[in-house]
Length: 230
Ligand SMILES: *Cc1c(COP(=O)(O)O)cnc(C)c1O
Image (cartoon, rainbow, N blue to C red; front, side):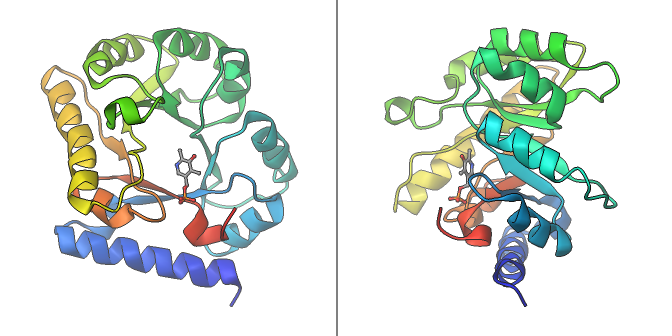
C-alpha cells in the first residue's frame, strides 16, 4: 500500500470514529483532501484510493494542477475547492475553474464571482469564512457581519450559499477549540432561523478534525495527515 493510501485509511477511520462518538452517520462528513503544495502525481494517488474532493489555496498552482489532471476521467468526477485567501484580481480563475469556494469574506468578491461564473457551469458553491478567534486571526468576516454577507450572497444568481467555514487559531486547549467550532454552528443555526438554508460547516483540519466533527462539521479539510508535512 502507498503512504497516501495508508494515510487516507487512517483519516477515514478517524472520521468514522469521531462520527460514532458524536452519534452521527459517517456519510454526514465529507473529507476534503487539501493538496496545496503537492504535485498532481500525489492527487492521482489519492484519486486511485477513491478520493474525489480536493482543496487548493493558491490560484496559479491550482490552475496548473487542474490542467495537468484533465486527462483523469473518473466517476464521480474530481471536485475542486478553493480554500485560501482570495484577492479580487483572481476571482475570474476561481469562477471558471472551481466547484466550491470556502473563503468568501466580502460582498465585493461575491459580486465579481457571480458575474464571472460561466453560464455553462453549475453555480459556484460558497461558504462564508468567519473569524471565530477574534483578534488572534485576521482572515474571515466578523461573526456580526456574517448575516448581512450571507443575505447578499444568497441573492446572487450564479452562487449557491452552502454554509460557513472557519480556521480557529491553533491551541492545545480542546475546550477552547470546541467553543470556536460551536460558535460557527450557532451562527449557522441563527442564519437558518432567518430564512437561509445552510447545510455546510467547513471546519476541522489534520490536528482537530475530531473536535470539529463533535461540533457539527460536515466538511473537514485535511492536508498533512494525508499527504505529509508540507
Ligand atoms: C492548508 C489548509 C488546510 C489543511 O491543513 P492541515 O493541517 O495540513 O490538515 C485546511 N484548511 C485550510 C484553509 C488550509 O489553508
